[in-house]
Length: 315
Image 1: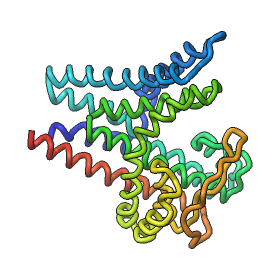
Image 2 (image 1 turned 180 degrees about the vertical axis):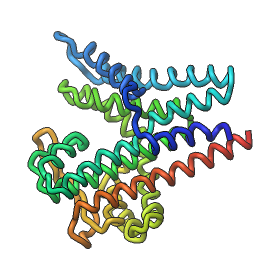
Image 3 (image 1 turned 135 degrees about the vertical axis):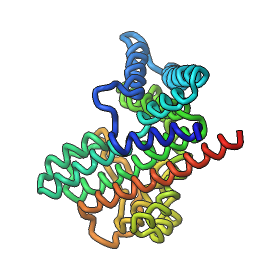
Image 4 (image 1 turned 30 degrees about the horizontal axis):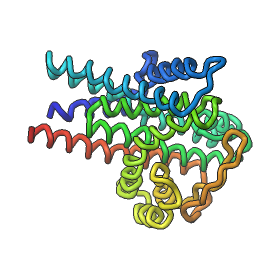
């Protein structure tokens, strides 16, 4: 049971408190490290390239993996229960389901109260795209897509890697995400950004594909349309890469159409539409999407805790 305790502790703390306030999280520290490495390799007179980009990503992910493994292993050797508690606290910092819920429900509340411009400002801080020209439908659609993405990257992915390798692998995933957040947004040329995006895609693709299938089960749990979620995933899932296929399950569960072109960095990004618009999209769909996100994360939590408990009993 001790082997499953970190996952249980981390999940409960995230549900209760969300992201820690006033305490630098490991991901924040990893982003600071990535920024320092970025500045080192983009100093005046130096030309960033793929080799330097890979080195930055390797150092950030390596620091996350080895630093957490050393700290947790030392406490497990000295006193296993304390080691499990520390790993649980670190694991809490790897999850962000409640923070995603709080952030996107602010968009919902602004739209409910008629403050469309405030809703647009809020979603601009959450979505990795240009949102200045979005109308109310566009804001809702972008928010639902953001919730779907967060189901995979902030809920399922940390739980999946934590299930396999404990908090060291979960933090290594967060290291890849930190490298993407910092290096991927540096205006230093595509060659420098590609390695950070590649590492993130590698660590998100498998858990995101699992999350898309969990969404079909989770939709039934929260009394959404699980049958349609499965049908849309089967029909439209291949339109997107595995890291984004969960959009199709969410579109079916909510009965709305997602996807389509959007603007990022002033350039139009073409995407296929997914799902059938059975009902006109509405700000209440954000609330349903958040319920589905929690259900998807909960399914992965149960799987992770059970597998770690079974492995512990066998060992």
